[in-house]
Image (cartoon, rainbow, N blue to C red; front, side, top):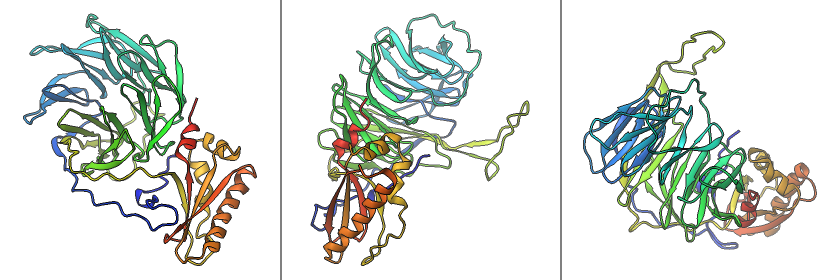
Length: 450
């Protein structure tokens, strides 16, 4: 079960014992300009020096990055184009249910199938090979292989993994582990653990970055292994990320784009989230030195309501969909933007109290954080390895009452997880009467160590 636990507005911005410090106003977000609309599953997205490319069902399309008409590059019999990788002499893409394809940089060149894979995703070009993920493992094919591979005999929709490369190693998410392999897919070395399927990863010269709803933010680990670091809470279900030399860029399910400093975790929203249609399942992000390129795969049923399909019947009629996906661009502007500092703690939940009352309005948030997330979080708190910080607001200067409320929350968690759970109670003057559940970022990140 995926649950968004806390909005940004609930995070603590003040120092302990002081009034909350307001974050300075951020200049108006840039608005995205739609390049193309009514697209079927624009999940694959990539840019080269001249064009931005995307998938539209089984069609590979492109438009000039500086503006101009949309053109169809080629078309294959695929459910959708999952991933696109660009080399100087050709473009490669993975077609769901169709294989791995090459399209040479020649006017009118065809799409050549070079591998008969059923669900190729996460394509990356390194030297003379195209690396990708397919049905549970990292694979590769020669870039110059003859384009005569037969179509796959069958395929099944679903999550198949994630892969990124720094040109020397592959970094993959498989099962519940994130790790490093050689370019031939051998010698897997675990770097971190996660149980989430919709994982997004990126790599730079020193670190592997990822985010998912289990970590409630972005984590990173040295590429060669080492301590995990919680970088930022700027993350939401369905988000994706990319990195450059200085920044981590996160695109959320509502199409907002955020920048996070690799140095100190400061963050700001750069692009307004105003493209979303109905039924968004995937978003994609690419960029160059000047622009962001965004894709949103929104769709909806023509008939309102939830469509029920009886798959036990041969030739079952599938719902008729309206595709409302878009591809857009926005300026990659960082100058003049005011960045908010990274919060000092990971906020897991808030237990709400009325001022002057020791009785919680709803005890659910005191314990639900242990059920909504991975079992490893529960186990770490239960064993006392992950201390729980309870920050109690003191709106009325009654420190004793605030501590009683926090102690009540601690007891509620002990009732569920046992007496070994460790608590640190803090008070925050001038805040509401609520009690927030926090974790120290370093201890929290360590829960996902291999």
